[in-house]
Length: 254
Image (tube, rainbow, N blue to C red):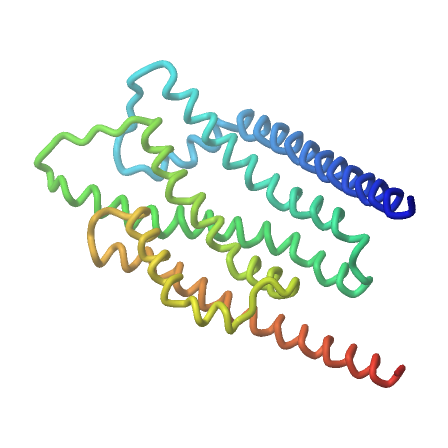
């Protein structure tokens, strides 16, 4: 009877946790919808800022092209606002299981997520985008008449910037997973060669079929992975010190 009551209690706890998590995802979706609307409202300002940086004339082939451009603008703005909000909601979800020190330290992840995401967008837009675009434009060498549609150009920007925005979160994710004991710097070092292979493949997917340019794109990804190992090492050492101190206190109590 006691086991049955305990099982029912655990089931109720799980149901309550899942319900709370669902509510937090729901509010995150609301924030995404609102921020998407803000980006859509300021679509002309964003479009003109991006279009003024284009060294060629953008064209429209169908009435729906410009709509998709506005959707892309709203999506990027929505991601920029929603990702840190979602991180804060997840922090509130796990906060009851953390100590005051752990809650205070883990809260620092939230603004860091926003900063790194914004830096990744900026890196992709101001550096990688220009490298890839200049290479592609150089291939024509005046042989063909270049005509670029608004829709495809903004899709190109999104394909370049958004992946780098997420890649810039890798060191932070490594720190968080290390603090949970899921990974360690030793594990990341052992899997380094496989990680490099994956990063090079990603570099080839984000850049044209030019070996030098692929290496240039893959280089910052590899740097981010090495930075993730370093940050993971800091968190791992701090975690080991805490575990040793906890073990000593337990032995002294015994």
